[in-house]
Image 1 (cartoon, one colour):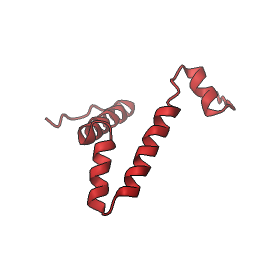
Image 2 (cartoon, helix red, strand yellow; image 1 turned 90 degrees about the horizontal axis):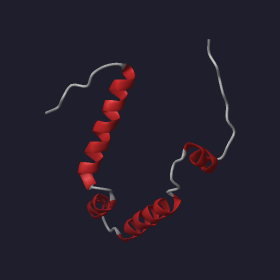
Image 3 (cartoon, helix red, strand yellow; image 1 turned 90 degrees about the vertical axis):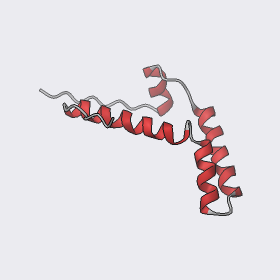
Length: 85
């Protein structure tokens, strides 16, 4: 038996209902910082350096996030992820 539930609400209503924090101000600050960095970049290399500095924890954060997503996908698929170490 399948049950299909459709809820019509705004993203803010969904966040409130699920108990998630409102990160709108933090997101706007981050977007503004990236926009300023992109305007001041004279080359692709310079833009890349700005992006590395703005990203949370830089490349380490990206690797952690990638590992997190891969583990979640493996768990959802019912398989065990092989250790890279």
